[in-house]
Length: 109
Length: 112
Image (cartoon, rainbow over all chains, first blue to last red; front, side):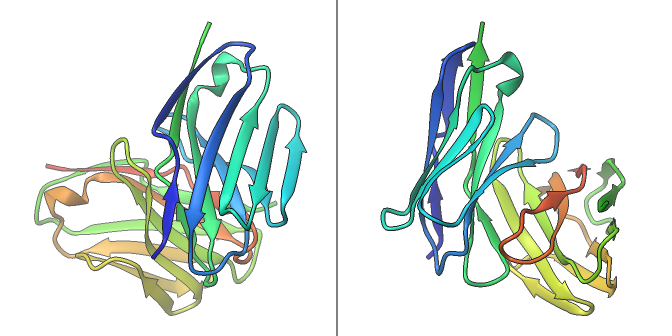
């Protein structure tokens, strides 16, 4: 079956670095996406990984290991506005994007 | 550029009443279209997706239905709402299975 696991909640301090992990088991794999969702708002796209390795985009980086069914999102130089839920999603071998339940990150001053 | 419009933003409906949520996409053709639901504090649950006009795939059995009468229009409906239908409904589009989803602003539905 389809399964995507993320920690439910994480806390961090402003200026610090935080790593949000995601493990997945899906029927086929066409890439892994990370989304950011602020409370009461729609998710917005952060990153896409289809090959193993690290993709860096400003303060955010995302890593993928297909053999391990594992990804992480790395947020550097945390800011208060980074407090949000972070959703891991996998594109399987159909046209569907399967989402994890999300990790709620709280950044404290 | 592409834009996605979803309305209404909020809706309060009594149990047993009908539902119609509409979503339209501009600036692209033949998009993949999706309806997701997010219960309070929960993840995104895929309800329906469509890869073309008149083509609808349902992910979970429920009292909701979807239709795609035009290439860039996706409608979510119900004949009789249940309390459990309350949630945050999100419409989304993508070019294909390896492209990011772009979400509408969502509809917060409360069934009373």
